[in-house]
Amino acid sequence: MKLNYMECWNGAIAILRGHKEAVLAISGVFVFLPTLLMAQFVGQPVLEGIEDLGGMTAAYSSFFSENAIAVILSNLLISFGGFVIFLTIAPSHSGTVADDLGKALRLFPFFLLANILTGLVTFAGMLLFIVPGLYVACRLILVPITIADTGTRNPIEALKMSWESTDKNGFSILLLVLIIAIIGAITVGVLQMIIGVVTGLATSGAGWPLINNLVSALGGTALQVLFAGVIASIYMQLTGKGSDVSEVFS
Image (cartoon, rainbow, N blue to C red; front, side, top):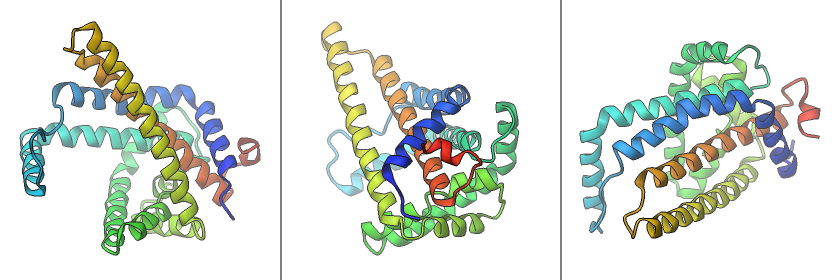
């Protein structure tokens, strides 16, 4: 089946709208809050004045060694929250948020292992130049929703199922992802710039870091949720999963 962009976008919006209460609660606790806390209390590596790759590598290495626990816990929470969102919007979903959290805890180790394998395969593709790597990543983009929907505990099987489902649609998915990522990044960037100018004028140039971090965390969370909806929509369109698939894409 050939991916239809309009159906995919309409399906993503319909999926997220149909689960908005649960998605808002989950993303707020497990994605937005850790992102905000990291930005407010940990921050980013100091790269000012560094121009060479070696200096940047040293800065990131030093930053991670000093904040390893916070970085690892934050990323685990965000990954867990993302997986719970996939469970909530999966075609086979049934039950409450509490049920989704319990199921996520049981499947999360397999989800992490599948992500690691996806990263390794994508990196291998990157070694053949960037485009092959991006193509491979898009062929494996359905791995999270596949695990969430089928409950498979075999990471290799999840990769295989995603690869088969996205057959002949790798570059179509790549183009869609790039369009959403570019528009999303520009939108968030412009919003941050406007907020930065307003807070700078209001504080004589000092700014309000908390406000800036709030906007950044909200933007990042919104993009992650949107991508989850798009991935679920791609999955439903290419696999035909879900008893109400025709209604979702109408």
